[in-house]
Length: 124
Image (cartoon, rainbow, N blue to C red; front, side, top):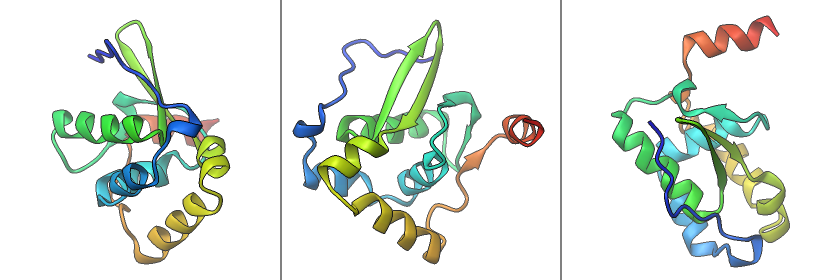
């Protein structure tokens, strides 16, 4: 279940480079960003990473608190999306450089979607 009491997304002008870079310093979080880079909003239940659900929740909170992602709650479900436009406006070229470097090095390649959601995506 997703509990987001007191959750706040920083405005673009409030995003701090050190916090964004810190959030992007973990391979699991880079993998999540790579997966979200297609621009689609994803349900938390669709996300797969080689960590416990509580650890995945922590990584998603770090990304949200840094302003890298936006999370919304719908009933008991949570959805997450990459804030590409906000990041590009505040730190031009940073996200592109991180994604290109991560792709070239294979950083976070083990993070992905559940087989059910991947099959649903392929069917669309």
